[in-house]
Image (tube, rainbow, N blue to C red):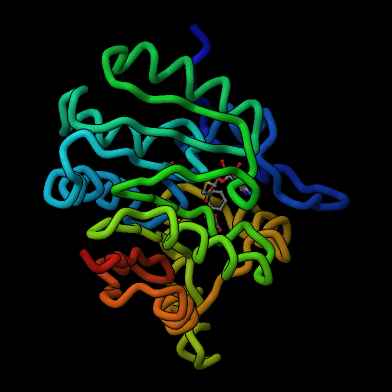
Length: 247
Ligand SMILES: Nc1ncnc2c1ncn2[C@@H]1O[C@H](C[S@+](CC[C@H]([NH3+])C(=O)[O-])CC(=O)[O-])[C@@H](O)[C@H]1O
Ligand SMILES: O=C(O)C(=O)Cc1ccccc1
């Protein structure tokens, strides 16, 4: 069993050159700690995904978890719904993430019908689904690729289906945004990250994680065809939206 999770200390020593952030073995080894200490509301969002599924998912429907990392969304759904309630495909580009997610899920919820595949969410063939989750994944796609993905997902959703989109966001007003980012850095500091870690990670994420405004997300979702779009959660510069396809 290799599900040990280490404390994130990736940016804790000074680096001559900060490389672009990537979901490599070093990140995977400390990912649960990294995401919990770096994403405000991560745990609450996962908890709510189970409740949203309970409320909106047609019994037996298919679910996609896109950019599934270590399978946290699957675990959240499996914790609330019985194995007969849904089938799920988790997709991730990182082979290390996929291997670890498969191990964890086969140990934690062996009876649930969960399949993890290594793939690019821009290029896979989607089958009809009742729920699609992008929990902090769209933000890593090149901005010019995001519209086509959302359109594909709209087409893959069954009538009455729900898309959940969680993202790091940016505010349109520069000063308002600066305040939010400063408070986010306070949040990270309070979670044990040093100024150097915060600053080096910020450099590593530049041009890798490119946040949109909430307005841009809502517009994109509506243009794709979603008629009901809502931001159901926001904590600092992290938000989660739901979008429904008409029944
Ligand atoms: N084009 C792509 N295709 C597939 N996967 C991708 C792509 N680009 C990036 N990824 C994958 O998207 C994931 C984003 S993390 C998601 C957390 C998870 N949802 C969670 O609820 O724990 C968010 C974060 O680290 O902030 C990584 O595992 C990437 O390999
Ligand atoms: O740490 C950050 O600055 C973030 O935006 C959150 C995050 C969490 C995990 C991987 C990449 C980014």
